[in-house]
Length: 105
Image 1 (cartoon, rainbow, N blue to C red):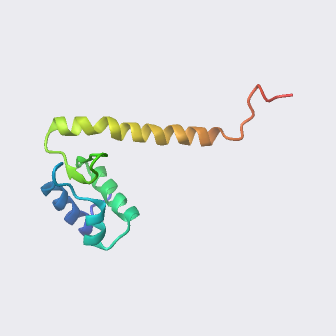
Image 2: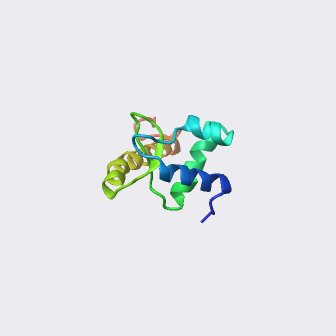
Image 3: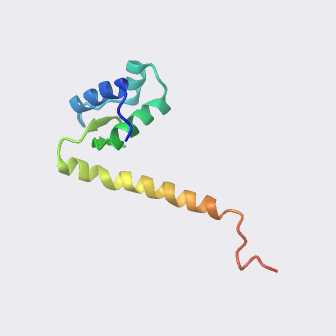
């Protein structure tokens, strides 16, 4: 497993201090680390891959470390649905160009 970078450790500390009411926004990350949105998302991904429960609220935006099991459980279905959507899209792209039995002469 890839270790967290210095930047990611700083972000992890910020996320730990953040909350649903006061989340760390991508704008704040961009301004703190002088990076773009893609790098911000990659940093969040790397922190999650270490097992840290970084959650978000799609309504208000921003990220924070879940403060309770219930807070994490509320977020988890949205995260899993996102992964399932990516998987479904990949399957559709995999099947593109295949001839179906209805297209045969």
